[in-house]
Structure formats: C-alpha cells, structure tokens
Image (spheres, one colour):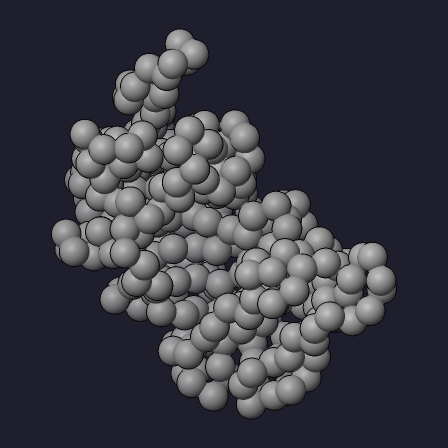
Length: 309
C-alpha cells in the first residue's frame, strides 16, 4: 500500500500576520505511470471538490497504483475560509489570473504558486468545481481531450470556456490535458455528487492505466457543442420550476424555467424561458431562491447540437 505524503508551500505573510500557504499531497505508486493532478477549491464557495479530492487520495493509496497522484485540495485558502468565490484580499477571481505573476496582486502571486508548484508538475489535470452557495451543477467541461472528459462520468459534456486567465486556457497553452468537473453546490445532495466525482476520478485513473478495472459510466453521455448561461435582468425571488433533482431534464423552446418575483410588491419582474428547441438543464437554483440581476439562474445546453459519446 502506498501512503500519502504532504508538503506545505508558503506563499506570503499578510498584514495581520497570518501566513498564506498551500498544502500539496502526493501518492506515489509502486510502478511507473503518469502524474495525475487533482485540484479543488479554486473558488472558495465550492466545497464538494475538496472532499472528492480527499476521498480520491485515500482510494489511491489503498489500491495498486501505477504512476503518481498529486493533489491540491484547497487552491484558494482565504476564499475557502470566507466561503467566497473571490480572494477576499483583493476581490479577485483566482480563475481569471492564471498562470499568475509572482510580482503581481495577491491573487496573481497565488495563481503563480499554484501553477508552478502544482499544475506544471502534472501530466494530466482534473479540476473540480461546482455551483456556489446557491447554484447546483451537473456536467463536465471538455478541453480538447474528449475521452478524458467522458471518463469523469457526467451525462452532459460541453466545450470548456475560454476566459482569459482561466486555468483551462493556461494549461492548454502548455499542452497539459485537462477536464473540469462541475458537480453539486448549493448544499444540495452533497453525498450523491461527491460519490459521482469519486467514481469519475477512479474512471480517469483506469482510463490512464493507473489502476486496473473497468470504468463505470452512465448508459448515455451527450456532448453538446452549444450551451449558454441564463442570467436575469432583475433581482428578487426566483421561483424555479426545476431544482437540483431535475438537472438533466429537457425543456422545449419557450418553456418557462422560472420567474423572478419582487419581494416588495410581489409582482412578476421576469420570466426565464428555455432558448433551444430542446434545452438540457445543467445548472439550476432551488425552487425558491434569492437571485440578483446578472447572477446565474440556469445553464442549458442545446440538445440539437449534442451527439452521443
């Protein structure tokens, strides 16, 4: 049996005397193979991925492993402390400043350390995200390597976004294959989503030849090339027709996904409808939820652009 070893990577000392540091964990197998990187906690309000990484490390050390698993469960410690999407010190989204700058803003210094001390050491990278405090997600982003993304075991796969400064763009530019899992969030059914993420991670290890066994995949997986986020133009109460248990549902064009209601006058401010002939639901809020103008309300994929993979 292999064992987990850990390394502390100091980044900076804050004005209040606290130390910003990263905790890297590693399991080295008994035989050679690739280095698989497991990353979570890039956004501090996404906690499911942290537990997926912890369980994956435990599983890796308890099975005959070919290669190495390198894990960074919390890439953004102070954001994790505050349950915040952004680094509180400079109000920056860490996933918009990769590969970072060792002489830049705090978020850039942190991104530089994450990239140089962790990402650049990986042959293959899995990044675990989810919805935040209010949204719940269930899909996988594909970045060039469709078989890798398929192995993660989501029923819905979509092309990875190309935001400037995102980890996906930086890793691709350096030729590091990656896939990004979006599982859970909003504190809805965490056990089910964590189990799905762990199963997908084990699938990836099997796909890479790092452990033996057959992959466990859903009967149908769709890769949809067209998708969009639906954001309201008014804030208030979102009365949704679809909660986390309806992720993966299909809604015909014009079908109402939810309504935004004023909490003050009770009038309907907006109706959010499905944009495609058949829209596959990948992100939703719960049946009654707070929402602000411009927030994610839903993410839907176009079933007409989807192929079975």
